[in-house]
Length: 74
Image (cartoon, rainbow, N blue to C red; front, side, top):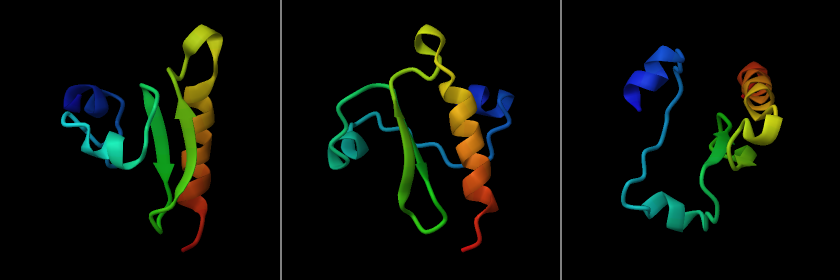
């Protein structure tokens, strides 16, 4: 996962949850799930399922939302 994150030039935290602790704490029900957390620690956006499933534009939507969150003042 680290190699792929490096290739994608991700500079934000990524959670690896092999023991399902985070999965269970959040009551997650679908894999994969992508959550965007703002500067104050609030979940602001999420995407359940694969970002590009059947032509979906989930990656573009999430990237746009990441930029919006980064532009917000604290």
